[in-house]
Length: 286
Length: 312
Image (cartoon, rainbow over all chains, first blue to last red; front, side):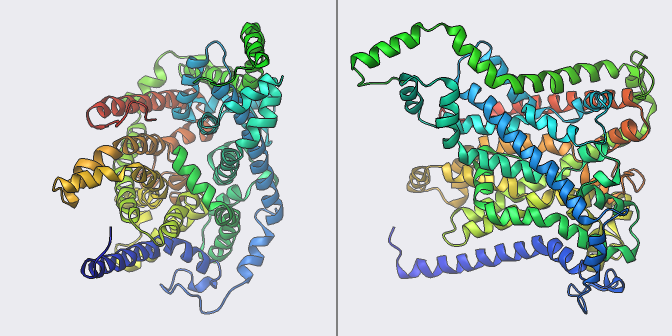
């Protein structure tokens, strides 16, 4: 345990090398993000021509162009659409997944084991296996090109990942509290809302943050369900740049990319502790 | 398991009534809690799975009623559609390249951070950040520009634009996945910290060097976590979409080299309106993922080591 002078020196050099290695790796990893930020501020003629990361002067007009939006829809509108979908998804997931999780973690009912196994299996189910019929259902209901297909499934606990995450967390809570409450005449509903739910807050926060970020980043679902530019999200609006990417549109395109990434960066900075721990404790996907 | 020490008459009586209370009442509450999930699982999972199986035997364009064609979609897929096999090959190549690279990097970095006293939290968060940002269209667009003709990679390596070269475009997509190694890394790190220090102490008392300790202690103790990451990342890799879409402008080019399975499925179903064909593709994907997962579980018996029965 006690370090003598000689090994300490050796250890210290090893440590310096380790930190140097980590920092070097970090620089390489952060390069694409630095590139994104720099390019969003570059004048059109410097975007591709030079390897220089720093622009010769800051071209703020890229951002004013980006703020005007795409296809005549302003960025504020796109941002609002993205927020509406992500917000609805967060609300739906937290509510429906915690309800289901409580039943699986704490209540006895017939078929509990097979249903739980089925729920776990749906975590591995590729989205594409249900995608087309879901699309047909929403199409028949006249809900394609609305936000319902993007939000409604979240209110039905279709993201089994989060049900599992919350189940795992609830199983760790002491049962004595609910037992005491039951003896005092507390039914399962009061017990859930008054005792279990408040204690589950860390898992609910993790669910909320991941739902927000994944919904925000989701591209496939938005791509198939939304086609009216006025209903586009920021992610979908960026898609318009995928087809036409002349050099002159590079600056505004990446300015908009920065705007689209900003909420995730802010979420990450604010909640990184929850994110990393939620990830580690449950093995969530990235 | 048991509540001990409660011997007051009231408590005993309440416990007794609770036991005698009809079971149906408690079951009813459970089903109320479960109802959103049951509805979702039935209407948005089970029913669609059955419907997509049915549709896979039909010709369906969304507007006219489905027309039963038997196995034709499958026959066409397997024997008459070179683009289908192209997409299968592309996806398998991508999975085989991206997943091992990503997990290896995640493990190496987790091992490097494991014993670190200062800065561990910082590195952990910093390496994790791309896992959240990388799934976005924004970063996929950056990737395309950086790997494009005249982009940074071209300048540094003189390889020309990867995005335009059939052999290289897929590698660029795979590197975007590898870049997101932070998610499995965090799980590895948590797993490494669960390994009791006594095991290392005992091993070193027995004269085991660093390498020996890694092989005989770290690897077996970490194998459940490694397995978990492997299954999860493989399943996800089979479904890659956004980066391939971005790098090829949604076309899967150049020369179909980034035409991953889901991109072709999207193309058949939602661009060409062959919903039956796309459903058949979806079912093959489902079966393939199921088969790969089953194989992984089967082989796991030989190399995944569970220290105690109670684990996981």
